[in-house]
Image 1 (spheres, helix red, strand yellow):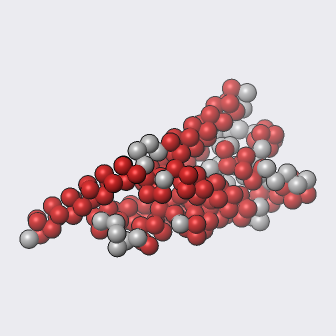
Image 2: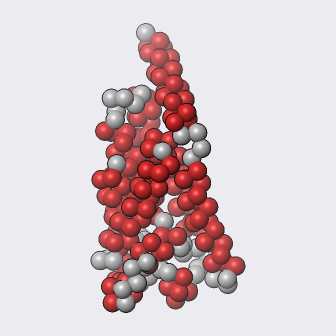
Image 3: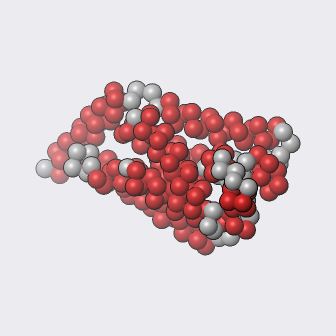
Length: 210
């Protein structure tokens, strides 16, 4: 009986994946966001910015988030442009890995346009909360607010629609992505130089939107 139940779960998960594939055959929104982030980073490097330890002043010229610039100089566009800048190759590599893993599932679930809505809302939510913390003392950059928002939206969707999503799939996603979320937030609180305010802001925005 246990084996039969396992086979039935696999069939249900496979059928559900096929439905998602049919509904969103091409996850172009995810590809676009990855391409934009990587493209901006390459443009930074080609302009002479260090690929490993970019200078804060250089990032600020490219649109990094800064409380002084946003609040005092009213350069509100920095809330968005900062989310496409990264502090080195490891920073963007980790962010794009996280975005790819959570994004490919969320993009299938919600479709391309709602995925983009979630991505940008989370990016802005992360930048907004960062203004009250990390961006007060230094510049803040990175897509991590958007990545945490995508992750939060995925976990929220899996929980809210657990009755219509195969148990095997929802359990696997909730476990793997949940562990990653706890680890990433823990690292953000434990280490200096990580804008955890952006992580939390993005996470809240994505979860609420979902």
